[in-house]
Amino acid sequence: MDYAALLGAEPGEAVQPTTVEEITAVIARADAEGKSVIPWGGGTAQDYGYLPRRCDILLDLSRLSRIIAHEPGDMTVTVEAGATLAQVQQTLAQHGQFLPLDPPDADKATIGGILATNAFGPSRPGYGTARDWLIGLKVVDAKGRVVKGGGKVVKNVTGYDLPKLHVGALGTLGVIVEATFKLAPLPEASETLSYQFAAPADSTGFLSSVHATLSPTRMILLDAAATPEQAVSAENIVFVTFEGQREVVGSAAARARDRLDAGSSASAPLPPEFASGLTDFPTDASPPVMLRLSGCASGVYERHEGMRQSGCKSVRSLPSAGVTDVAVRADEDAESVTARVIQWAKEHETPIALLKAPASLRRNNEVWWPLPPGFALMRRMKETLDPNGTLNPGRFIGKL
Ligand SMILES: Cc1cc2nc3c(=O)[nH]c(=O)nc-3n(C[C@H](O)[C@H](O)[C@H](O)COP(=O)(O)OP(=O)(O)OC[C@H]3O[C@@H](n4cnc5c(N)ncnc54)[C@H](O)[C@@H]3O)c2cc1C
Image (cartoon, rainbow, N blue to C red):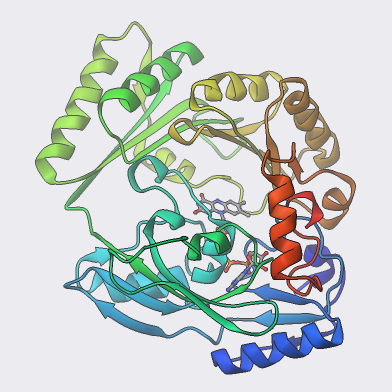
């Protein structure tokens, strides 16, 4: 593993605990000795965020990976943070249930990492984010103390919702060691429409109307300039998925198809083998850089078009989440595309984040721009909960 490329430095030591007690001891020792702790799940998103200010102890959670309890009747599961999403799904599927999150690399991405990044993907319109499914959390704080919040039943929150403080905090306020989730039944049916449109305005018009009236589970607008291996060019492509009960799915998909037939646009269904190769984004396995533009959902098409016009070759928007992702491909100049996208975002006052980038780019750019309105509060929170800067120091928004 090239730790220096991900973290900017080789860690001083690596530990691989199997119990919560070992984790409390590691963190208490680090805090007392002025060392930093870098939590490590599956390592799939370690190139997200600023470089840590210090990189002393790599806390590898992969051996803290038990499924503690699955209660199919209550539709809840409690798991240790190092369990991978694939491992959890396998257990749940035996009872016709699942945790509806869709990160790439589900066989590597861990529950702790997914919560620490509050990751979400194309299923957000149907299922929300990890935060929406979380009902209880066990965390080790920066002093090495175990803190619990929420519980193991669905209705349990009274007072401050402490667990959610740690969701999306990138491991800067505590190390997640255990989580309890509510679950969903596996959908009875699923149908995906994959179409290519002739004109951008038609694809966006179709997506807006489906989003407003047909409750899709997933919606994607994609432009990925053709590579020599592809038979069809991949501009102006739309994927819409409906999931749930068989009749509801059938009827929503039929109504969506009617709209395509009735519309003025020239649109054509994609060949199935081609469509399946494009649903993962980015389509090339390991782009050096990914950027995310966000903002109000209604502005998403303008952002998508802005990226297209800026010459980006691989652009995906998730209209209902309001985000547009740009993948910089291996055949592009990563630095100049990144600079161009950041410039567009700033000129259009559009929040931007570097989702994935090599150490040099994260050292020389703002990973998140602009600072969010609540930043002063975030800083006070970090200073109060981690006064010595033990946990992932410098990694989060504003180098907290
Ligand atoms: C290119 C790209 C595309 C993505 N697309 C999607 C998508 O479509 N849908 C989606 O849902 N997600 C997406 N993600 C998010 C990604 O899949 C998740 O962030 C990933 O699941 C993280 O899990 P991990 O175990 O690999 O974490 P790691 O990479 O090991 O860690 C990620 C961060 O979390 C911290 N961390 C890890 N474990 C813990 C813990 N137990 N306690 C506290 N902090 C911890 C780490 O210190 C680090 O800062 C994408 C990410 C990338 C880079």
